[in-house]
Image: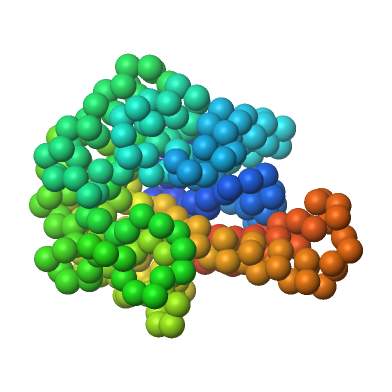
Length: 288
């Protein structure tokens, strides 16, 4: 079975993208894993700082690795959006396959300094943990939004510049790079999310020389996804969409079955709702 680095390299060669989906509990994990197995495609399980504090840092790794080993399946654990070296180190020590240092709100020099520290620690452990970093702020919360997050815009001056991406990757030695190309965290409630800057994605891909990651995938149109993958996106993050599906299925079941108290019955529709969303996204990302 290929490791994560080999899996992403294969996706780049095929011109497809690997799906990355966040969880907050084991129900979400089963929904995502079931969808991936049904299609026979690799998948990445992400947990932000808040999510892995809830699930458990080492417990997340244990859950993902148990499924990978039992089913001999390319399922990977990613410590999503860590905001300090200490949290990155914690995830590396716990055995995650990949980690993300998110210094997008920091000055570029400070972002690069801490990112390089994370890379150096990962390499020193000789664990094969991959390191991703971000340049360009796109917000922080996977939720429904009334408007663009504070500090986020779609003006070209606010997006990642190819020359900055090139220098950042060279200075830090990261494995994956997440740019700001019109994407935002969360989904706007009453209007579509902004269109992605496809020419910028292509230019950054050529400049950076490492696989590109698209954060804030929820709310992006299918056609825009296809175009972004063609332009050079290798990993796509989805969270808000599956949170909404999970919540809605849970609400509807409880309202319709007020006397049910067995958690495994109450939660089953949420697992299926997550699976349904992930199936559609994985089919799209894999060119099916």
